[in-house]
Image (tube, rainbow, N blue to C red; front, side, top):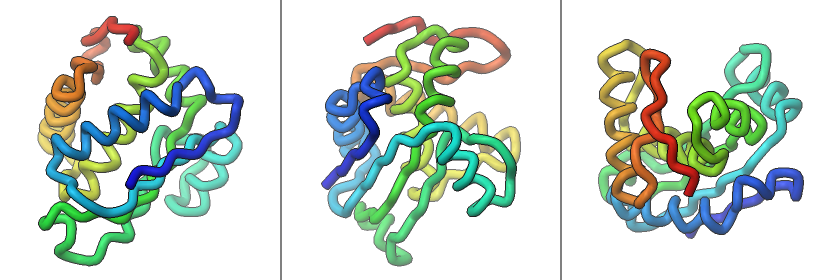
Length: 158
């Protein structure tokens, strides 16, 4: 089940669309059961959470909290809370030339991939993870959205 909560302030991210595409992304990634909670937060809340959980100042794009029992993710089961920096998504979407909801979906997929064992701590891992993000975005009908080297890879405004 996918739960999605947000304040009215972030209606531009179109929660129903996000929930629908997130469900499709879960199928693409082999997630068959579990509970995925997605929350959209403003810069103030993201800054507070970023400092509390990562020890870093300022807002961030996404925080993922994986409560899945060890081994369950290999069986397609996840228990996850993903918090999206909605204002970060809105700013980055402008830079990347696509709708804020596409940016938010990118962050959700990024969080899911971390829960499924992907990492982005070094350049080669990051490149592989971003390629997988774009594959999933294409599979759900959005198209590639991750930008590398200052180039916009998607101008879609779904």
